[in-house]
Length: 94
Length: 145
Image (cartoon, each protein chain N blue to C red):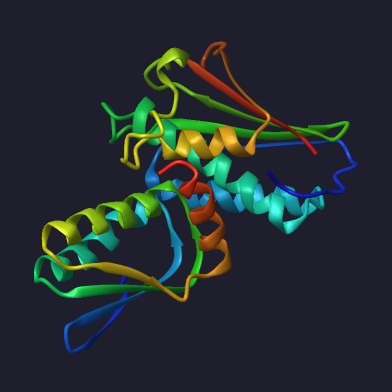
């Protein structure tokens, strides 16, 4: 699965889409982690994500931790309703 | 969690899937189709699909972690009797120790165990039963609709 990535000065935006599960999570890491490692601020556009499970949450948590180590940050943008619902449930736990 | 539903009919359907991460989307599709037939509302349907997908993922991730190239199957069975929804999982992976299947402490900031937390949040009951031959693990999730 490929994800569109746009660059705007020091911000990289990754447009995630479809269903983010354990089968896809490593693909997402492969796209996001090098951007973080290069020191860029990374925005994850979630408007076209129809489903996300704990694997997707893991990717977000790991990305945040990695960004902190690199003195940058990861932000979620245009979070879709299904993703917001899962994030709300996860916030009780994380 | 969840909303109302109008699952008034009794129903039973089951399907076998290869124990692979690539099967998880098929597990979700199967469950969505069954829940459509049961006329379960969208909000609850999304939650149930998440719980089922997390349980199936646990089979792939934990019960088969030492045997990732296995061609074994797992079976997912969805039944609804008198508005009580029961989702059963059968697999032949490493035997699950129910005592070890719990989400971690809330002050430990790591994502591990989140799937188990989701399952427990969404479902009314989570039971590990003795798997009868040829099965080793038999997990049953229930929810009153």
